[in-house]
Amino acid sequence: MIKHFLRLSFIFCFVISAQAGNTSDKKDDTPAKPKLIIGIVIDQMRYDYITRFWDKFGDGGFKELVGEGFFFRNTTYNYVPTFTGPGHASIYTGTSPATHGIIANDWFDRTENKMVYCTDDKTVQTVGSTSAAGQMSPSRLLASTVTDELKLFSNMRSKVIGISLKDRGAIMPAGHLANAAYWFDGTTGGWISSTYYMSDLPDWVKKFNEKKMADKYLSKDWETLLSIKEYTESLADDNKYEGKFTGEISPTFPHKLSGLAILKNQASTQTTNYDLIRSTPFGNSLLKDFAIETIESEKMGKGENTDFLTVSFSSTDYVGHMYGPNSIELEDTYLRLDKDLKEFILFLNNYLGKDNYVLFLTADHAAVNTPSYLQDVKLPAGYLDVAAKFNELKAFMIDEYRDDSLLLSFSNDQLFLNHPLIAKKKLDLASVRKATANYMLSMDGIADAYTADEIHNIPATDGIPLYLKNGYNAKRSGDVLLVLQPAWVEFGKTGTTHGSPYMYDRHVPLLFYGWKVKNGETFKANSITDIAPTISSFMKMEYPNGCIGNPLTGFLKE
Ligand SMILES: [Zn+2]
Image 1 (cartoon, rainbow, N blue to C red):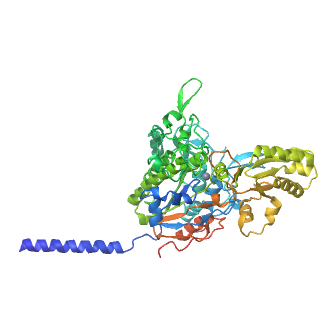
Image 2: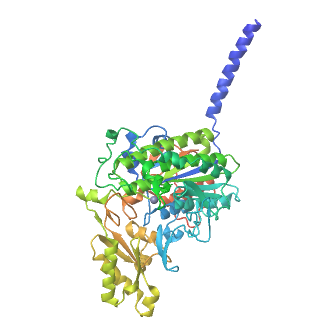
Image 3: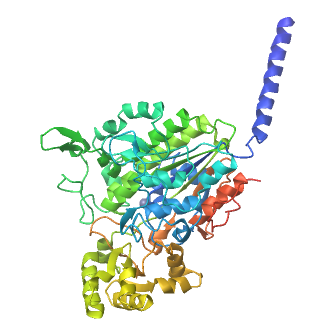
């Protein structure tokens, strides 16, 4: 009898606990705000990489984000030039170069009278190596980021960290108030920072660097993940549209990384060129390892306040520049990134639980199909020889004004004129700009040329004039802004580049996943500057100060 009773109560208890399990499953214990926000930027990712490579992706990576998350399939950049520095700055400030001031990666600065780099800062020092690669800060970024706003909103309690192989991919997203930003140093193969953020690397970063993960990744050859016959979305492995690694005779698999990474100096001592890893999919794997280490060591998402980790995968950009969108190397890089994303998502789901963090994934710009390939298949495309054009322009200046020193720089499709000299010669700046613009317009491959005066007066409506206006910073931009014809580039004939106002450079994926994110998709047009205000809206905090975007709606559960 007792035995029977025990058995009954055992069954009874079992039923109760099973029901309790069920009810707690139904009860929504999703927190009111995510514990951790993860911003993922895939450098140079075209929207169609998700759709072209879809059948080759495994489960758990891109398919998990699309299958469980919300896909904004019509997300575009709303300014030129579409480069990495401006891209990262715009995603996180919710505004364009007109306001945040990052008008390119490198640009001609009138006050310093030289080319400057978007994150260089000689007032700070490298932390973690003896190289100069750490003399970087966000000092040229003029607006606040959504990560800055999170720091202000939480009275500095939220932890904000930015990581990327590229300094600018780590620094722009992390903003001005970050706890840390880390980027990769090609001389040591480790992660470094600058005195802008800290005086010494944390022990966990030093320990991670001591593991020499870059050596491990570079010790293996880069073989294709699948059998090479399966890369049906790409051209043949050996084709004339691809660049080559220094030291390789053909752009073909396997790429023997361990040999390619060895540098011999004059004394014949060997050093490793760790920068090689950037142009392989393993640069992304190394960043994924470091992202997981960062979250665990810094206990991100485990505190009272929402933390923010920004992760920018750059190898996609280096591989894209060298091999182009139609190469097996590029396809393989995305298949391997898909596996890295799967590992990262699995880690996050175990460490925090899917309901406790929110992740977004987008790109800082996209890219054009290799123009020489487009020409061969009879699409209009071309190459602008900037050095030759600059010389033609100098000749024009001598004809017109008897002085070619009126020209200071031709960079990022912008011409910079010498304002003090124009004043000294008592020339009218607006007329010189207009004459130069008209002359440039007569050149092959130039679709249009706008003067700074015209851009000031453009009503902000839509299309290329609006993108120019959004990209035009009154203090930093040039005197004449050129628009090349579609698929015309300033680049070598292999691989690809970006920077134009055309759809192939502006159209990028945008996915949200985790926390309260519904499964779904939309083709409604939205802009890259909408991401930051979207985060502000669900965090119920202020928008970044220069924000011009609007919060995205309809993708969160009530
Ligand atoms: Zn980029």
